[in-house]
Amino acid sequence: MLTGSIGTIRLGPRGGITGLDLPALLIQAEALGYDQPLLARLLPFAERGMVAGAAKLQSDS
Image (cartoon, rainbow, N blue to C red; front, side, top):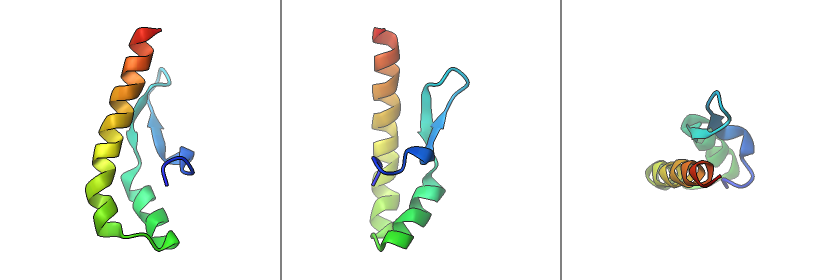
């Protein structure tokens, strides 16, 4: 779901990932028939992983 939702990634002023637009992702989940309560629990973990991974990539460059 996240790979097809590039527009829901929030970017900071320098272009780094600051988070996900969780309400927008839950609306998409509803439209696609996904389990919203489950995604509401899982998406914050995915968000943390994306932010941490992006920060690591920026610090390595």
